[in-house]
Amino acid sequence: MRSHPARIEGRGLRFGVVVARFNHLVTARLLEGCVGELLRRGCARDDVHVAWVPGAFELPQAAERLARSGRYDAIVTLGAVIRGGTPHFEYVCSGVTDGVREAMRDTGVPIAFGVLTTDDLEQAWSRAGGSHGNKGEEAALAALEMVNLCASIEKGPPGDAA
Image 1 (cartoon, helix red, strand yellow):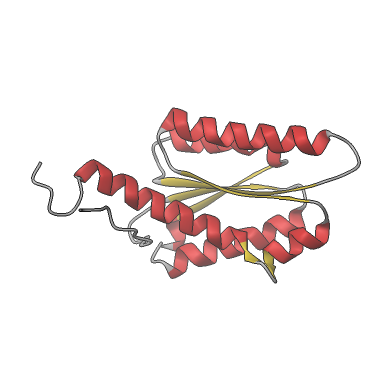
Image 2 (cartoon, rainbow, N blue to C red):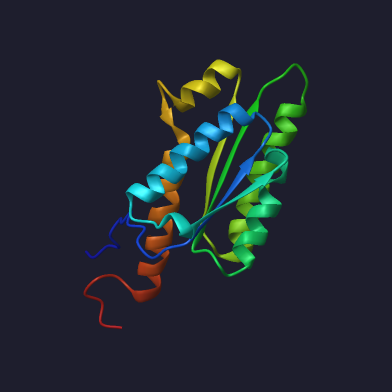
């Protein structure tokens, strides 16, 4: 059995990172974790471009535009949707999830989902550099792994005589 290796190397790759301004204190921490992880994995600082959007609901459109530009190997989306007392939470979460999935499907560009959906601010803090780690770092790792996997799939598995 041959398999495609899981690689999380970022040297020579370009990333677009879309960040929601709403819940800015949380999303800024997610961004810090994401960019830090990309740099640790070999990405050049100049190859990481950040686009801020008003809120999580706008993430899919910006992610799709960045993906369609042809300038990025992968996109990372970062946001925080915190439950309130109305059904707004469910609508936003569904719209963001569906929108990011559709952007990835329609463009073929890996788009990592780093959007927190939490019951309260305490849960968001714990996932943005607190006791549950930094989901921005995890999204960066997912983007790195997927862009490398997609490249490997296009080439064929190691030892494949195509």
